[in-house]
Image (cartoon, rainbow, N blue to C red; front, side):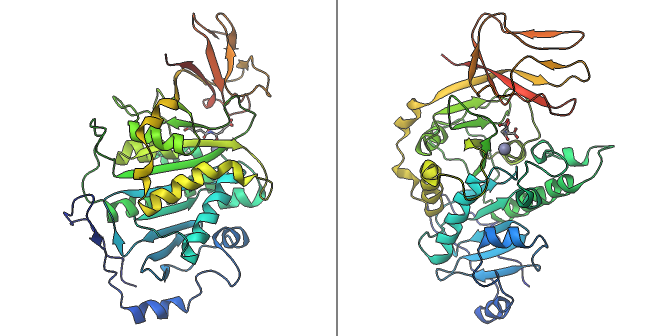
Length: 384
Ligand SMILES: O=C(O)CCC(=O)N[C@@H](CCC(=O)O)C(=O)O
Ligand SMILES: [Zn+2]
């Protein structure tokens, strides 16, 4: 099979129409399609849950509008429109934690709408299901937390290899190949907010416990960077009115795309963990609409004034499980964004303790059960 045409050397400027003439002839494509794309009466999610064996290589189909759809591997679909409207590239990931099902269902609905022609894709787009084996057993992960293994952490010296380390490597390589094939210019961190970033990556999650703020986004740490107004307005369009600014490097999927490719990436927490079929999908209308607007290149209708309705929090302390004597002084069922006042002791071990300073701090993701060396929660300060 011929590789899809790449636009790496194309100098077309954003806003113009970019032809992506697929090199394989139509008859070649039809021949390939005799190899079923999905089993009859199945869709991407059902297919991924039913059969964990990787699909045959270069399993492709062409939609009526000429968009080439490729199953890159298990739980990975790329969409390459015949004509792209600008240089923006989209990545939507879900199921990095297998039991966070609502965003998986949202993405799957959208993918079905793309296949039926209801939604038309105008930009190169990757939809990724992070951890299909964990989805299948309804667990956060099988052997270890996939969202700590990116940026090469899966391959660090002495690191025991397992299902999640292999998956992190695979996801990294799909992202790399896709961005190499479709990036028109070198990614930059623009300080000019009027120039849209080239690559958007929204890594969609739901949280383990209740939250005083149901939906919130985390912006990975990249030195000297603030989220552009446009991105904040996009979050508002997705009903996400709280953004946390990370203060230290991390091995998350959104950190990979921000740090390595200069993407505007967010981890987006959209509600709470529920089994498949138990999600109230009307609560996810905002993210559903935002993704469709981006796919169709219609996001200019999102007013940047909306950015004012966001509360920004800075991570002021990362709680790390320091080992045997570590004690997290927070009840397991405490909600995200619970405030703690001056002098509250948040954690301690036999050598140190962490107390809240003069301003109120808020906790997210408290979890004393993480392995030693891993994050057991984040303390936040609200920006004035
Ligand atoms: O609810 C929880 O305790 C965890 C929810 C979750 O999976 N959060 C992500 C955040 C990733 C980031 O910091 O960008 C995670 O912990 O991986
Ligand atoms: Zn998660």
